[in-house]
Length: 116
Image (cartoon, rainbow, N blue to C red; front, side):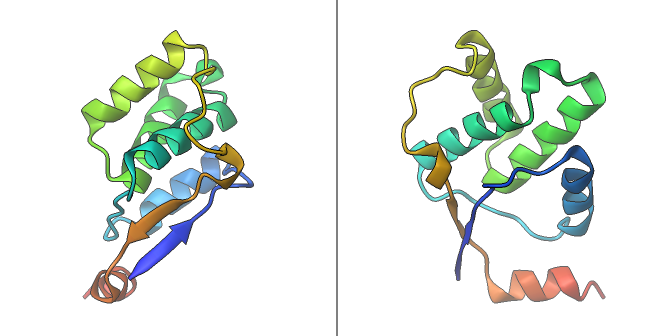
């Protein structure tokens, strides 16, 4: 099953925290590297990464890892690139449409909502 996720409105830090708690059993994987990187870049900008404190940065980092299926080390590299470029990296795609194609099995969704 493929689910398209879009983060057009942006999430508050409280909403990210609730999402992470509610989706512990669900794992996401991005389809195309360029889309994933563009989405991460856009999300860092939406959350004003440079202005966040340590706790908030950890929360956003976990959210990015969860939503993309990218390793912690790769998220760190992407954040570093974002910081070096001041968030002005060339867009790989229209970030307004930077949805990520995700593959989630129906069994994974069932397990997430029925943790027995």
